[in-house]
Amino acid sequence: MIDSQLLLLARADDEVTNRNDPFTKVHSTTEQKGLTFNAEYTGEVFGNLSGGLKKGATYEGLLKLSLQLDLTKPVGWNGAIIYGSMLYPHGEGITDRYTGDFNRLSNIDAYDGSLES
Image 1: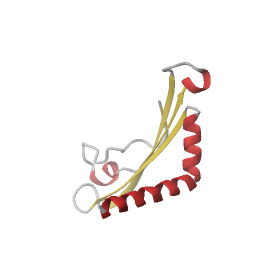
Image 2: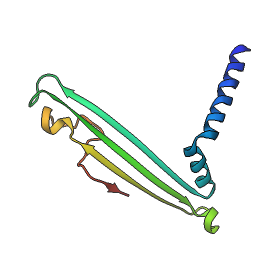
Image 3: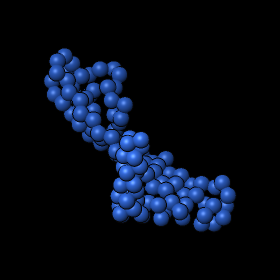
């Protein structure tokens, strides 16, 4: 009984926090109009402590942005969606500079620059 009351209080607190958050307000307003924007960032640090080409560490990251437009709401075309995404990998992976292995150690390792789809 006490656990369920604490859970309800925590949910109520989250709802109040979300209502006051400007990002949540903008995001929910745009979604109501059929526009959904997502951003995701992944960062990694790898280190080579022994073996390979030389010792050292490196950082790399991947920014993924996506935009989806549901055409049902703005123009009344049911089921029509326009979607676009962009990947922006950056940083130097550990493979080329430190380990010299044949298989990339990171699953986000790529050439620096943006890739659109």
